[in-house]
Length: 249
Image (cartoon, rainbow, N blue to C red; front, side, top):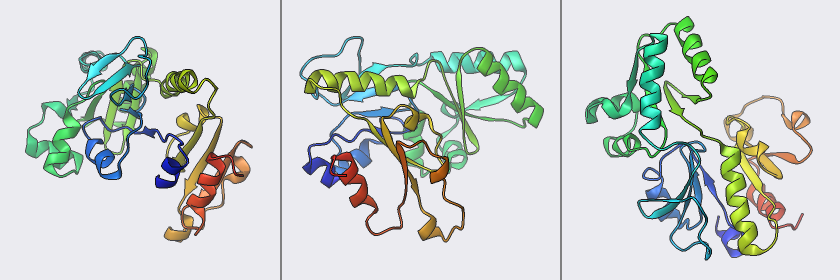
């Protein structure tokens, strides 16, 4: 990240976490650029990052936010409606006590509490659902055009989340500020879905076969030409990434 800063290349974080959850990591790593949070629900801009104010924004904490999904309580209301319609019992994380929240999220109490406060999406788990219950629940969510994603044992529901639109909106802001169309380079781990890379001009799929001893066959032959696979265990992994992003290769 320091090399990208030195080359004056903005690095935008994309996360399923909330703005409160990533506040401490951003501060520790000196991250001062925009970020996309809650899985494509909104674009968060630091104070006075762009000289020209973007339209249709809202103030959330210390950030100017371009909302893509509908803000809470839209997702909370949608979850209640979906649960009632399908007969599948759900338990929202925001309804749990601090102790229950830490137990169900697997996070330390303080971090778990930050997870509770969400601007857009709703995190929950399914209580005693059978496989057919889950299938019915997922199908009904898709029928309503809501974004349902599984996060391990937890699930998230959003109304209008769109990661590609987040990237497009941010790209337009950079284009206006730089007076040229920026090239968007995405970095995503191989375990992540392809939604981010689909929104980028070029990209890297990050693997860790060398460090884990995995014998999984490379995916490079299945990737579009504009994407490259890089093993994080290789000595020059980040050097190659920075060279590509900065246009040196």
